[in-house]
Length: 353
Image 1 (spheres, rainbow, N blue to C red):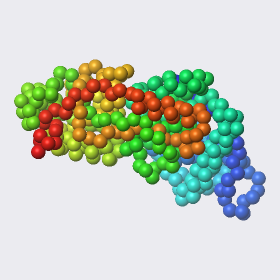
Image 2 (spheres, helix red, strand yellow; image 1 turned 135 degrees about the vertical axis):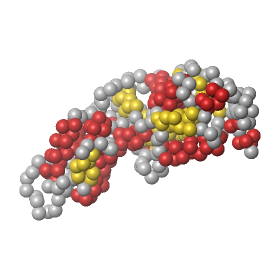
Image 3 (cartoon, rainbow, N blue to C red; image 1 turned 90 degrees about the horizontal axis):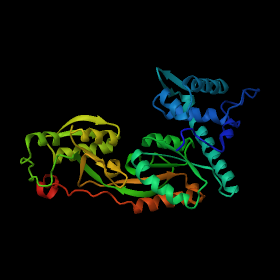
Image 4 (cartoon, rainbow, N blue to C red; image 1 turned 135 degrees about the horizontal axis):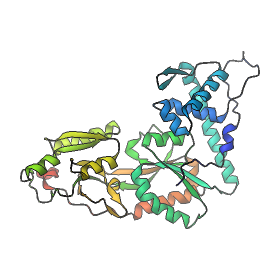
């Protein structure tokens, strides 16, 4: 796994981009725009803060600001309104954005055509994804893939879904691995390849035995019932948060939320400490071929999380990406979920009814 982005086309960032930023009145000689400046512009426009944009680009914040200032100087217009650590596109910046995105897309297709003409030889596959899929499905896929392409290495980024999309759009990665529910159908222009269905489970401390509880769960000891009604909630995106809130409201009407997390892994570790319970996809509670020690996983009546690979459509049939995608799908199909406990009686909708 590489921490520095290794791209065979790094020098292309310095290519001068012929993009018309002003009226015909200003045809005099001026500094020219580089592809790097356009990638900086796009990333800053889509990042929540300058700090986050600088981290994604691997730049120091002063260097990032300098690149933006150069671009504004060349364009002759202010492209961002500056507000503390945040930048918001001006009208001029908003007009420029479609042109910048067209250039970045065209440049990505140009890089791909160079690779294809070179016989598909590419030293590095760059990918980004959520922790659970990178830690569980990816290793098996890489083993399968290296049997055919032993000389290809990987540049792997662990990122939240929104950041995965940003990295794909700026061509800093070739493939993204995310839950389909975490991105909207209209939020990306990438092909989706299903990899694995990841069932949701109720994660509880190991000492909490719900298998024999009655439909009312009133037979549990007071301490156990208190833990059961303390919910650690994963907060990412309104659809998931609403689904989780509705489920707990129906199944555990006496619950209270004691913590909100931005990662399933953190939520599960709080459960291991016997602070409460949480809903999580099974893969986030897996180590190797089994569940994490210190927790129990109970089946629940919720749709599974579908993990998909996102990629520009031209990669689907371009080697070595096509072979790697096949390896991902085979790893997903061949993965055996750890044993899950049956849904407790008080969590069965038929029993509750």
